[in-house]
Image 1: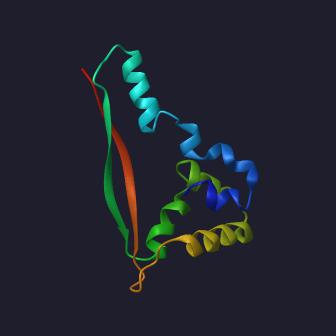
Image 2: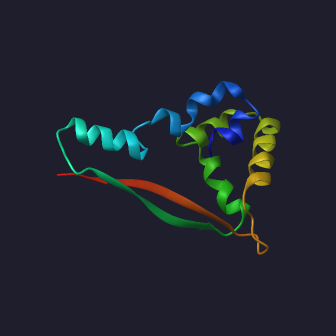
Length: 113
């Protein structure tokens, strides 16, 4: 869950966005760090992993566990707020005709000499 889902309902949670909290998790800062460490010929590439959820409940159920920033936030909400968040997220997901949700998980690999 990114800040578009929860930030639209509660702008005060923008600081929970993992993209902002972990700036090294992007190719440019990773490459700069490696160059700063004295490495040359630095290159990065995306590692994309297709992630398919059976249906929305399959996607949403981990948020109810309360572990990690997004689930912890979701569980801090009262039932009405959590339902609003759930509905907003569901409305913005790419749900296929069969109900499945295909997303892409991305990690960055970096190398240098």
